Length: 89
Image (cartoon, rainbow, N blue to C red; front, side, top):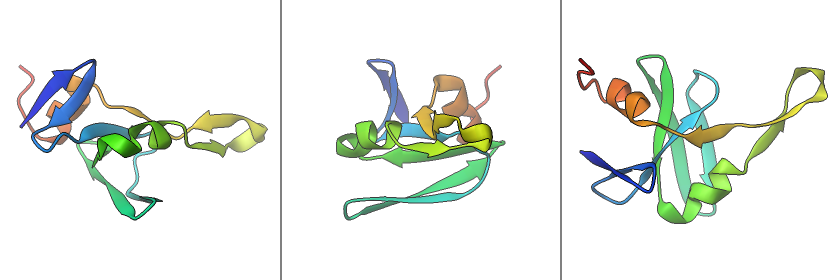
């Protein structure tokens, strides 16, 4: 399943849950690793190798009006539970 380690949601493989800011499927390649954000429960999430977490969290894009925003952030426990369809009640 997953566990919380230093504020990060980590699965049994040691991968960290990252949420994409838009609710769309998204492909990102970092080095030789490929990631596809899957959309479930209105959340776009992927499990990321620990070596790639900081690289993904530092990715930015120019939005409308010229503002520069980060495209990903760490998923919280509620995000992961909803994405995995685990009851939150």
